[in-house]
Amino acid sequence: MANVRVRFAPSPTGHLHIGSARTALFNWLVARRLGGDFILRIEDTDLGRSTLVHERAIISDLKWLGLGWNEGPDMGGKYGPYRQSERLGLYKQAANNLLEKGLAYKCYCSQDELEAERQAAQEKGEMPKYSGRCLRITARKEDRLAAEGRKPTIRFRVPKKKVVVKDMVKGDVEFDSEVFGDFILVRSDGTASFNFAVVYDDAAMKISHVIRGEDHLTNTARHLLLFEALGHQPPFFAHMPITLGADHTKLSKRHGATSINEYAEQGYLASALINYLVLLGWSSPDAREIFTPEELIQLFSIGRISKSAAVFDIDKLNWINGQHIRALSADSFTRIVAERLTKAGYIKEINSIENKISLPKIAEAIQTSVVKLADVVESARMFYEDAPRPSEKAIEELKGDGAKMVICALYSKMSALEARKDIDFELAKELLKATAGELKEKGLKGKEVYHPIRLALTGLDSGPELFYLISIFGREKCLQRLKGALQYV
Image (cartoon, helix red, strand yellow):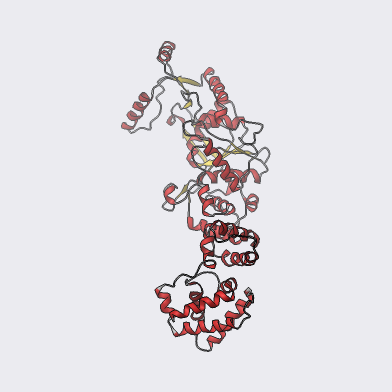
């Protein structure tokens, strides 16, 4: 498809959240899949709440996700500026053109008057909408109101007609324009409303597809009327299903971290978050669930966006993140482990000979169990700290005759090794196999052998495979801990 141009247009009034990030992702995938342009546009006409700090945070989060753009406020482009606050003159001129054509009019109603109208409609059980009282205001009254210091808004004169939104996800959705009322184009302070600015900008920036949440469906009906009034062909529309929390209510802070920077801080990989976000409303042709961003670009299509609401499932996100962590190369994951252990104070000199030997082993030992990168320090802690005192339940297990035989058997085999011999993974496996073979003849097998060894070496019920522990701890530390465990026997 030629000349595909899509946009992501966040309001810089807060951080980038899950729902907005999904919108950005779907637009980015369409652009990359079809060889089009992805435009970043900042909708900051809410001057009271918009901040440059939030704009920078949103840009930072998008870059962390890897969603690069072709045009935007930080890089410019043919259709700039890309901040709505820098386009106010364009909106004013367009609104004045609509005034001259009789397609819009000035409204001098005060907030108190509008609130009274709203309450009266609610008391009658009607949908609140503007009555149009200023539509036929006389020039004399307009002069009087202006003299009083009232600054008018500019309202769109909504034509009475049926509006059909031809949506690429929902199909045809029909609205009666009479339910809208004449809505505001330009506020009394001179700033454009969302509905007016977004339509003007989409037309001016030649946006071909508008992909956004279904909560904008009613706005789209208004937008079609504005495209017609401005004399522009509307883009194609695709409205994604909303995202709900696990309790099927609107996703919010109470469902857990919702901003992208929080997920990054908790140790989710950008590739995993993208993988999960795309599954909130889209499915692959082959029913797979694990993808790289490059694979998604090849597979994504608007036609496979679901009509049904998506449910945010933190357990599913954790599973996907774990899969992406396990897909990291050994070198990449080792670097992550080194950085986090250094920050935690466990490593002083990454490039020391000892760490060059031990860090790859530690990384391999924990990579299969880490769910989030924030888990790295906790998972690796056992390799740097003294073993904690076993629980009372574990001590009771160590007191058994079987546990004593296990500990003594492994202690004997490790004592026989050369004093400074390096224990690699294969040798560690051989020691465990020999110990298990010896004890099998005495009636012990499986968990009866391996669990006492784990308790003796770590004081914990679970953790990395035993051969990792033995190899990383080394001969002297293993002997020390095995001997220490005998005090409970």
